[in-house]
Structure formats: structure tokens, C-alpha cells
Amino acid sequence: MAKSETGKAERSKSNGPTKVAVACQGGGMHAAFALGVLKAVLERVDDKTEPKFKLVGLSGTSAGALCALMAWYGLAPKTGSPGSGTAAEALKKLEDFWLDFVARTGAETLLNTFTFGALRAEEIEVPLLGLSARVFGINPYSAGYNALAAFLPTLGVRKQYFDLNELLAETCPALKKENDIDWKNVDTRLLIGASEVVNGLETVFDSDVNKGIKYPKNTASYWRQQLPLSLEGVAASGTLPVFREAQRIGSGYYWDGLYSQNPPVHEFIAGPVPKDIPNELWIVRINPQQWRHPPDTNKDIEDRQNELMGNLSLNKELDFIMKVNEWIKKPEYKNDNFVKGKKPVIVRTIKMEEEIAEELSYSSKFDRSRDCMARLCDHGHKVALRWLDAWQDNKAGKYPEDAGYRKF
Image (cartoon, rainbow, N blue to C red; front, side, top):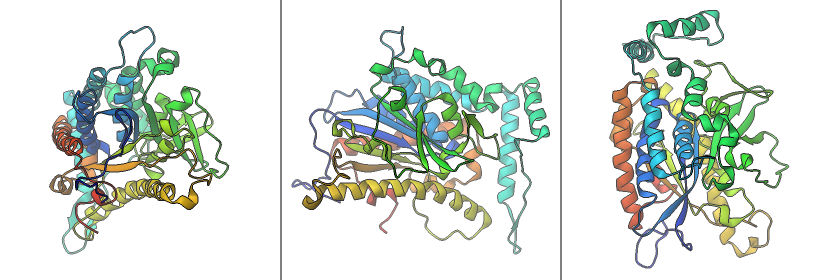
């Protein structure tokens, strides 16, 4: 880790508040940890003590996209609403959304118990044989699934509980009508990751596109696209193919961004103007980077497979940022096009305590109980406040050393 003369961890030097972008990994209900982290960040964003930071970017994929969207939406000024777009508004939007997202009614609690219980049953192995029961399977395109969805409201299950498009439209009405967002005064950029299914395109829904900001076309980006931010794009980011039909947007069909960017971050450094690039990128890591031992049960194998899918896609983007940082420092690259308009970006990690991460599994990502949400949210809040104190004292670690729980 780079050290200053005082022996403290290096932090970016800039005029005024440090510009920070916060990126939230997806991970189902485990993203309630990110809810707690964002609450702590929003509580401190207007802190009068030094050093100050300015939240210039938010990013998310899947459930992390839901967290990032709610924080961004609360911060975004609305046309016809003077004084809107505050950290307090963002805090309330985050909390209200998650209280709507988890099971609220008796019927929803029963449905969650069945769904979560079925997924947990799949993880149970027969001793000695190493077999697990596959008892839970859904085809969201089937007539049976559609009939069940139509029947659930009669049992007391809110449509918002199983229809993500409905919940997002109700929660973020100003984004449904794009002119209701005061785009010219939006100071925080939002990136949402998704995967286009038919053509295999890595996709980012980017609020800068809505603002009309033009980025130089990268002719090498054959399998990438940046589209305007929309509620449909956020729903696409949260579309697990075993639970939802592919989200249709224009001529494209979209699934979860876990497969491509979890979450998108390199777009933050892709702009041609250095002042628009954040000084620091804070990663809210939901999926543990490291395990204590190789997975040796079906349950652990499924859990680790899912974690690696999300982590490896993220680490490739972070490693690219670290490589650009190295190029910027080398005098021989000073006039090369790939460093022009760039500046070093410090990457840091905010993660769960190892003991908490070890208690979780793939199935618990689907536990939509209020208890699960509250426990992980409280943990995220506690961890983030402690981490922010370390950052305040210039003692917070840096990527890649801080991504894991032990030296590698």
C-alpha cells in the first residue's frame, strides 16, 4: 500500500471535496448490506468536518442497481419541486423502497417462506452419496407461471412484490416521465449494468446519456452499448432468467448484469474531461473475494460459482483502472492517447465482516424477509460508519489488498 511521509494511507489530493463514486454489487437480498452502507454514506455526505467528499457517481447491478437507483433518485432534483434532491430525500427513498421490496403481508411472508425453503432444500445433500434434491424449478414463460402470477393478488400478495416493473414505477414516478427530472442540475451520475441476451451485448444504462453528454465513440467496443437510464433498464438489471421473462427494451432483450458488469465502473473513467472523473471509487462488495477453503459440497459449489461470476467480471474492470493508473505515472506514456484526459483513481473496498459473509449462502440471497433485510442493513451501516472514520483519518486501505480478508 502506498504511504505518505506521515505513514498514513495515501488519499487522492484535490482541490475541494474528494469526488467519490460508489459502486454496489448485486447479490439478491445480500444487497441489503449495500443499503446500510449507502445510508451511512448519505449521512456523511454533507458532513462539515474535513476531509469532505462529494458523491458524484453511483453504480449498481441487480439488487445493487435497486440500491443505487433509490439513492440517485432521491438526490436528483425534480422539475417543479424546488429544494428536491437532497441526501435526506435519498435516505428516505432507500428505506421506503426496501420496506416495500420485502415481504409485508401474511401471504407474502408465507410465499417467501416457501420459496426460500425450497431453495434451501436444494442445498441439502444425502449423506455419503453427495446428492442434492432439485425441488424448485420455475419457467417464467410458462402458462402455469402466468396463471400463478394472476392468482397471487387474490391471496393478499401485492403486485409490487412479484412485479419489479410495477414497484419501480410506483417508487420512482419522475423517472417514468423523463421530463420530471431536472436533468441539467443532476450532479450525480448513475450507471446500471445489464446483459442483452440475443446479441450478447454488455449494456450500461447511463444517466449521462439522458443529459445529452457525448463521449468519444470507441470503435473497439463491438459488444458494448450505453443506453439512456430508464426504469425498464433497472428492471432488466434485476432480471434473473429463472424468475422473470427477459426485459424487452426497444429491439433488445435483457437479463441480469451479473454476467457482464457487477457493477459497471470503467465508464466513470472513460470521459475525456479529467474534472468529471472521480478521485476515488468505493466498491460495496457483496460477494466475498476469498474463501477459507475450496468448496467441497454441492451447496458451497453453487454458492461459490455465483460469487465468482460476479466478482471476476468486476475485478477485470478494476484491474483495468489500476493499469491506467500505472500508465498515467509513466513519463513515456504522457503523450499517448490512452492516457490523455485521464487521471489516477484510487479504488477502495467496503465489505462484510468475514464471519457474516460465511453465514450466508446462495439460497439466502432469496430470503425476502424483513428480518434478513434489517440484519444485513444494520451490519452494512455499522461497517460503513467504521470504514468512513478510517477514511476520515486517512487509514482506509486500497484495492487490491483490501478486497479480501487475508493476504494473497
